[in-house]
Length: 397
Image (cartoon, rainbow, N blue to C red; front, top):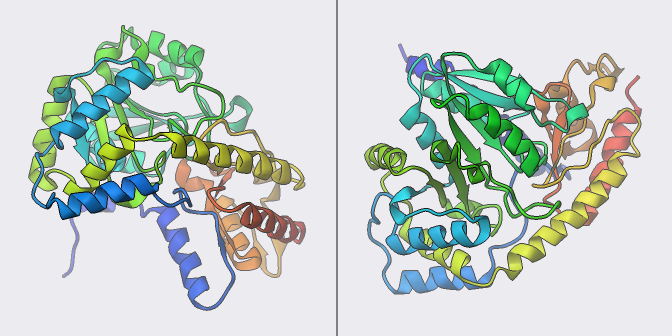
C-alpha cells in the first residue's frame, strides 16, 4: 500500500499555488484570465543585478558555498542591517538560505519542540501554521479583523500566552493584508514579550521596502527582547528576485549555529550565482527599489479607489506590500446560475469561473470573511479585473 509519512497528513496544500495552477489551466484553454493570486513583483530583476550574475557565471562561481552563505554576502547584510535598520550584527549572526521561506522554517525547526505553541496572528501567510505543524508544534491563532486593520494588540498577545508558548511569528508589512505595525504598536507587543523571557519572535520583514507610511520599524529595535528576535528578510520582493531564492535570518549566534546545523543536513548553502547577484543587490544602486515602491503605491491607490466602488465589499487601505484583503462576507448565502457562495473560497472560485480573475479565498490565511488580491500587475489589468469582479458580484442574488 502506498502510504506517505504521518507528518504530511497534518499539512494543507498551498491555496495560493493551487489557485495559480487553476488559472494557468484556464489560460491554456484560451481563457483570458487576469491572475491576481500570486505574491511576486511583476517587474524584472534590475539590470545591474543580472549583470553581476552573468559575471559570476563567467568567473566560475559554480561550486558549493559555505552552508550559511559566502562571507562577502553576510558582510553586506550586516551593513544593510546597520545602515537601514540601526541594528548591530556580526557575520556569524547571519545565515543565508534558499529564500526567506526556508529561513522562517529553519528558525521554527531549530527552536520549537513537539507540543510547544507558536502564536500566529491571523490573517497569516499560509505557510506559517503548516511549518509549525511540521515541527510538531501547535499553532495558536490570534485573529485581528479589518476593524483593527488586521493587527493584534498587546492584550490579545498576552491573552494567548500559556506555559507552552515558545514563539510569536510577526509579519510586517503583512502578507496577505498589507498592514504595517507602527513603532508604538510594536513597542506594545515588545512590552508584553519582555515579561516572558522564554518566548522568541520570528520577525518576517520580507516586504520591508514596499512600505507606504515611511521608514520601516523592526521589533528587533527594542533592547529588552532583542536577543530573542529572529529577523527574516531577503531579496525576492524588494529587488524583484523571487526566483533567485535568496533569503536570510539574523539572530543570536547560538540560534544561527542551530539553523546552520539544520540547513547543512538538508539543503546546504544556497546557489552561488544567486548569492553574487544578491551581493550586488545590497551593494549597488537602490534606485530600482524606490521606483518599484512608487509604482506599487500608485497601484495601491488605484485598486483601493476602484474596490471601494463595489457594493458589499469592505475595503481598508493597505500600508505596505502589494495586496488588498477586502471583507466579502456580505455575499455569503447569495447565488447565481446554480452557484451559491458559502465562504470566501467559494467566492474566489466563482470569480475565477465567472469573471476570469484569479484571487485567493481568505480561509487559507485564517480569515474566511475576506479574500486576497495581488496588485503586482499593470494598471490596465487592475482596472479590467475590478470591472469584471464588480460585474460578477452584481449578479449574485
